[in-house]
Figure 1 (cartoon, rainbow, N blue to C red):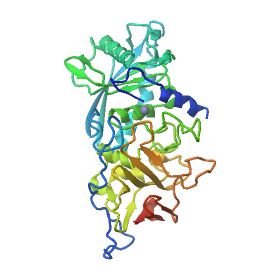
Figure 2 (cartoon, helix red, strand yellow):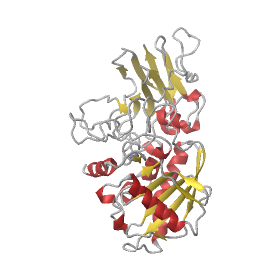
Figure 3 (spheres, rainbow, N blue to C red):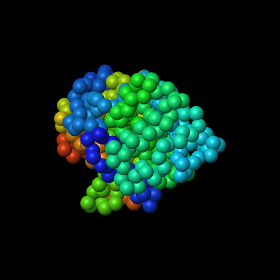
Length: 402
Ligand SMILES: [Zn+2]
């Protein structure tokens, strides 16, 4: 979830989803010089770098100008807060800090080390000036309520905490305060402390104990400009299925999904992939590429691309990436070519990314969406044929034939 200053009040999609989740190298056709088994990763052309066609968080280039840089150092202040009505024990500070650590590790691993997060934690619990019940998380937190909550935490910590070089403020509430229910993000904080204008903040509420530390990676995705990939409204033909767009294939869709690796497309958007790892298919030539498992794309192995992109309109592209049970994808049910469409005109929460299901109607939903090696798929708007073949060491050969 992400809050904008312009939004007067805030619906609770993530909380709602949480509840429901619980219930529940281009090769020109004539270029015969390239042997079929070789991987050729030509630089991505501008034709594949689809421009953002919607304001705010989305899947186009560049990311929203209010996003923090995703490459380089990110300095985070982690403020542990408790309340007069829900005091925390001193001993529980370590547990609160540890719960979010895996989210920081995720960001550093998935970025291939391009994002370096330095977390400075408050010296124990910081007592908030108001009781926990004065912050209306359970009644639908407005932007103003959220800024008051974060601002109170910063003010309470300010005597003993140096905010002068902080990029993002993370406020995590004691587990003793279950009415701080969920974990919103804002990129429009507008609080100054120690001479530093603070603009980005995330609250970690009680739901962090259900999600675990990956909730930090989800919310940080918004800080870096990524959209929500679950649906704020379930499709009429599939009532209640807020995960009809991407299932559990990216943690911007479902934090607890089996395949929480960020999509290759979003890694490219964030600057976590080199252009040479993106193979851009054209509309008048056959394109082949050898894809590394997306979880290994941070290693940028020579000859192994991270994805094939096939633009089908000014704002839409078909993307193919290789999902294998490695890294954060260890628990996936089906492996192979994950095909999805990206639409840069679709805003956060409305399905900017949609996974193509290789087995539509199966009982497993999108869990078995990948196309197995040896199969193919015809892109419906252009008739291009995409074929998928197994390669050595978990790689996948993808060919796009217009
Ligand atoms: Zn979100």
